[in-house]
Length: 320
Ligand SMILES: Cc1cc2nc3c(=O)[nH]c(=O)nc-3n(C[C@H](O)[C@H](O)[C@H](O)COP(=O)(O)O)c2cc1C
Image (cartoon, rainbow, N blue to C red):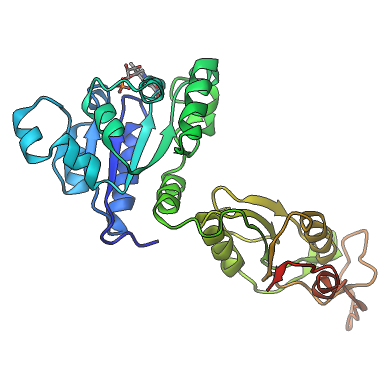
């Protein structure tokens, strides 16, 4: 999504993931956003203001009481200019301060002074993340309207495995984009099908088609960005799942039909853009078929017609 003319203030607090936040700033700037950066004293232990200033093309704000910064940048001007305030990484410390209204440095002061939408990307050690006080603080911030992206699960810089990794920069970018668009699909539940199906011929061969899944994935991404709850039923594709979308993966037309059926009840909008096979081999071989001289005839039978089945159960749903 392009962000030309939009202002996203990015705050970095003191975690090892600061180096990844540099990539987030780069993505936002690359999409055309104006990206003033605020760094806590802790953040400056991990990356330098010079790095962020170079990436953002803006002076970096670090100090509430610096005469030059206050006259040239100004904490209230920063707070007012922000359409979205992203904190990435958000430390346990900064979450606690935001939850309780402490404003003892520039980032937390701007956070209190802004009316902008807030996106938090927490990153920390798994035990810190699981600590009840961190979860309570986060719940308070969410209840006040903050959007949270991540943390992701995996190997952590501290040597532990678990939840606590900063979300992928592309996922953080997506969450900021969502914070900047009207949530006109809030309350809708959109069910999207995407990609091809694969109909087995034998355990190693299948009949399929060239569907990339790109259209369904793009629709799912945009619907979620605009506030919908999204279920994406997808055949085998080489695309990363859109963040925040419930992904159900299937291979065959029969599995697609079952998955769509199972996800239908809560859906208010159904968009079928999967390229579902019309036919499948009548008797797939249980073993790898051997090459034999001469031609090979495969007998095909029709697959279940998902659209016809949906038509019968459409109800009040918008069916595309
Ligand atoms: C090497 C190192 C890595 C750290 N990584 C994190 C981290 O990923 N998340 C976190 O919440 N705190 C982390 N901390 C602790 C914070 O830096 C510390 O709580 C600090 O007071 C945060 O200040 P700030 O929130 O104002 O930036 C780390 C500390 C050190 C020394």
